[in-house]
Length: 94
Image (cartoon, rainbow, N blue to C red; front, side, top):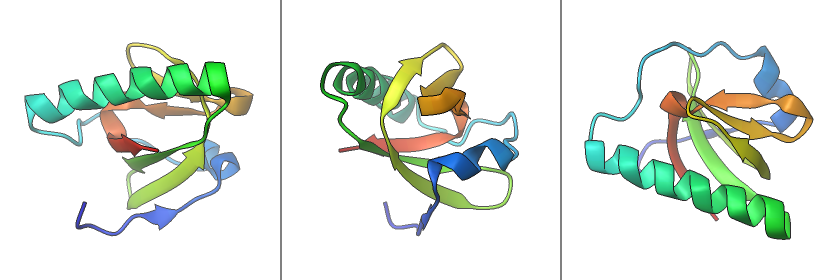
């Protein structure tokens, strides 16, 4: 990605505000994000592997390095019940 993402601690995510709009416009990227989330979920549950989640709140683009504990149809669930709406996630990487 060419855009800069600001590092954020997982504990600060709870205080962020997330718009309802989708950050991705390409259907292929949306499908790729879904696959990346499922892989991150497996790595998180089986190996407790930390991954990088690139996402956007209502003010800027952010990056958190954490373990994914769950994925619903609308949210990524992190440790301690912290959630990020899937429609605000740009990319996931190891």
